[in-house]
Image (tube, one colour):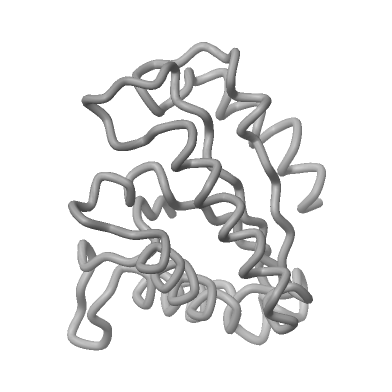
Length: 163
């Protein structure tokens, strides 16, 4: 289930105000049923944020980290393990885009340090840094890579980790 921001209100319900709360509740209701947990265990959740968050006017690293903590706390209660995918590097630094290489690296470092500093998160999380691998990969636009990147990331890296 794609989530584009660390915290947003794109999906609201009478029960929850944010997308992150609603998706976590959906996972809990659909994949954490007694039969599913007995047969498969609780889900492994793959999460990422940053490239879209950078477009939020006036966002700071501190604000971004509060949003990431909100995201992780919501998913920690429904996921057996969480895998955080770091941000990809942009095609080239261009002043018309807020997603600079420096900012994306700064946010990845801040998220990694936050996870390492919180034992309850560290015990249920892995961090995969993809920035260097993405530097020379074909980009579809400023921040998104081509279809092959995402297929390889899912099929060659994540599926073996999950299964």
